[in-house]
Amino acid sequence: MTGINQYKGKVLVAGATGRTGQWVVKRLLHYGIQARVFSREREKAYGLFGDAVEIVTGKIQNDGDVANAVKGCDAVISALGSSAFSGESSPEEVDLAGVKRLVDEAARAGVKHFGLVSSMAVTKWYHPLNLFAGVLSKKWEAEEHLRRVFSQNGRSFTIVRPGGLKDGEPLQSRLHVETGDRMWSGWVNRADVAELLVVSLWAKKAANRTFEVVSEAEEPQESLEPYYDKLD
Image (cartoon, rainbow, N blue to C red; front, side, top):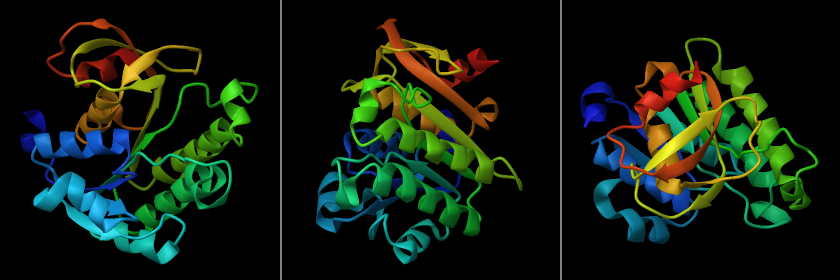
């Protein structure tokens, strides 16, 4: 388990109680990495993770809550995602403003690396998914903000743009990765998206990369780190 030897920091997971976020936490714990969970509902988070993680409660819409969550962390992985057209759970409040707030507070707190779950097709304003309150455009704006803030002053970022998300165990599929947002379709396991972001904590070639990923075929993998070599 490479991560045990190569990463010693504490990682905040935002969106940890969602299906992808749960996998991020599981993979951090798999590698023996300290995880802090940021959640609106302490009981839900505790029910999922118990005493294996540190739980900080608060809302992504509140500056103070976010600042408290990132304090003392070395990295942040965001699996935030909207679940409504309007209000606190909308793309405007979560995918854009929430992620931007998390990025800014993380930078102020001295966080060195920020991993983000985004989406395939974020640059395509005419994509049907944008009918959902412009969710892809909001994710794209958040990506741009992260790139601006975390590509300087010794900080780094990794942005993973998955295809459609499905359930399944990690490391069971051969993946296809690309840059440039040229892919239009495909599926990938949430667990593999989580694994790629956890690996980005120590994989040097993951620094400051934005890429798309889908599954190609069922084929067990020893590690997903080599996929970062394919981005060159």
